[in-house]
Image (cartoon, rainbow, N blue to C red; front, side, top):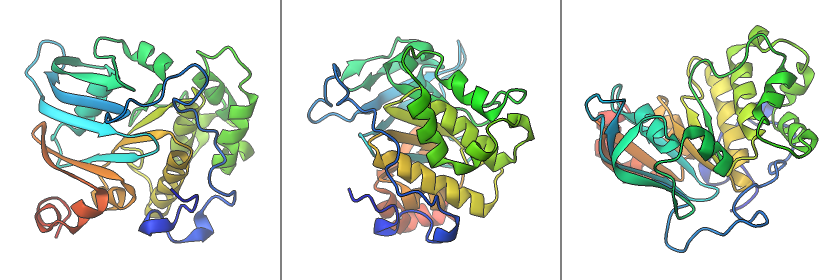
Amino acid sequence: MSDNPYQNARGNKDKSIANPKPPGTLKSYGSETEGRPGTREGQPFLIGDDMTGGYGTGADILHGCTISVDKGQIAVIVGPNGAGKSTAMKAVFGMLNVREGAVRLDGEDITRLTPQARVAKGMAFVPQTSNIFTSMTVEENLEMGAFLRRDDIATTMEQVYDLFPILREKRLQPAGELSGGQRQQVAVGRALMTKPKVLMLDEPTAGVSPIVMDELFDRIIEVAHTGISILMVEQNARQALEIADKGYVLVQGRNAFTDTGKALLDDPEVRRSFLGG
């Protein structure tokens, strides 16, 4: 894949709002890291395979749902309200019971691992709400993201500041004083401080303006270019599919359509039923 974030019609074309730094400023923390095996041939890097389950002892919300993403890919989950999009994401991260099916990371079955154990394996999750410590400064939020690390975090913090320059400028300001888009940058930056292999984002553009949405999508593309896999739930389906290598349309907890982002955008039935024509 080219280092150009604007190739293949991916990302925002208005370079005036883009990060002035060139893409690829984040270090890749994929499975090529020393001591880690590579992706097993023929298997996605991360897959929630044929998942059926729900919250606690309640009714199943997911019904044979499969979601996967390869290294350096952007996979987007879209669908109508109540389709089970966020539930599928949480199932992959271990936040609810998967009664049937399995979750595998780099070929390893992690279905029974806690979310905390999955973070240690290289997964990072950014929830839609309550995703920052509002009373702490921006820099303190980023430091909290590195709570499992025992190495020097300074280099990673500089990489986050390069990705989100406004955070460097506001690093000593309480995160609760930031705009909605800036808060989302803090949340994503804090997740990147864990040095993840997989970054999971639940509605990252919820409540932000269109120009901020475009900028966040540009930064997501930039992160994927480093080899980090992105799994994302998005209500802004058309815009999200434009940057997606792979797209999943869920309906009532089931896979309705699965294809490349471009193919889903070009599919007349998907456009008519889920994208407004």
